[in-house]
Length: 322
Image (cartoon, rainbow, N blue to C red; front, side):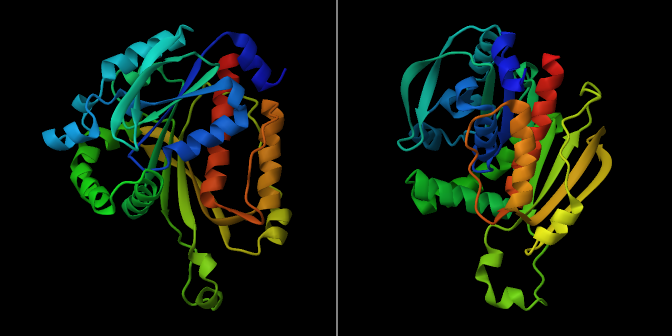
């Protein structure tokens, strides 16, 4: 029996929590999990729906969405408690385009529920999570992503977005950043270290500067993971033959906020054939029939990180299902 079949037949509800600042990439990683496991067995809740004030009132009060008082955290706890018991909930909704609340809606429990938001790993809420992720891009990257998303996708005024970024930063440090110490996986995203101005190729190929990132995955060690892990085998000879673009991967062990952890560094671009072979191993374990769209030619470090986060989640689910 594959993992999808076990999840469907178990009668259990597993909750995956993804926390991080606005525009940090939470939805990107949520979508990867959803596509791998299958849309039919994954439900998603965004904690933005639990804001207490609409956008106009927040500006009037001078309070940001990152402040706990601007969110109905107790209702979130109650709803997660009910969902873990397999009970249907009726939840609020929030429209980012208008900055106002929509009608309340029914939400049915699913075998896997992804909860993403600013306070996902906050006190009380994290007790209901089976797997906890914190997305932590460098400030420069986070600011750039948020401006692009809010202006191009949500239709916000650019100057207002910049003002909000500046206003929110103190509350990020007070109420959001600390949550990463409770995460099972922390995803740190930096500008690439691969670009070398001495190399002549970078003088002519502008595309070398696009979507190039260095990602560090910090994975907390967990003794409950089964002795027989899900194996991702990298063919070193294939890696050498296939990598016409810069790619690097490294590993070391250390402590992260007093807990033993594994650190995986990924930088540059991995050949898509090698990436596909790793993805196929996960899809076989899951029994997935979903089409996991990947770019042609090469995938950047974020795509590789998404795959590795999914790999760790599958190991956790496998250990909990027995």
